[in-house]
Amino acid sequence: MTELVFLRLVHVLGGIFWVGTAVFTTLFLAPALASAGPTAGQVMLALRRRHLMTALPLAARTRRNVLASAVTIALLLAGSAGMAVARYLA
Image (tube, rainbow, N blue to C red; front, top):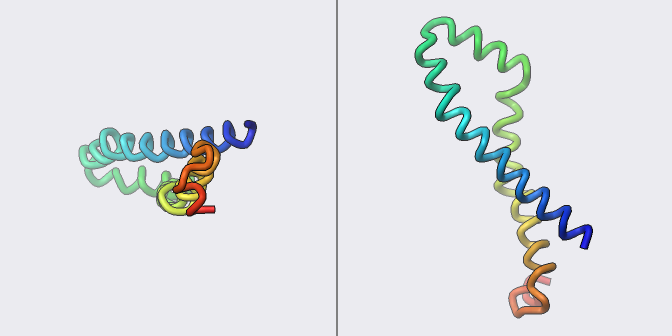
């Protein structure tokens, strides 16, 4: 039971982080940088120093590929109650 709660928590929080950063970048960061003109370089440099440009792609790749797949399969196995798909994957 605890494992299932943990897996769902990882799955949901990972999705929230991934979608949240995409929305923030698309709706707020990119338009703000576009309107800032030449000073946008300073903002991007500050974000780079804080490792944002490393964290976002890493989170997107990890969330989409490894973590999402592993958690989804684990949730499928845990919640399938012995259905044929779960037997096939196990």
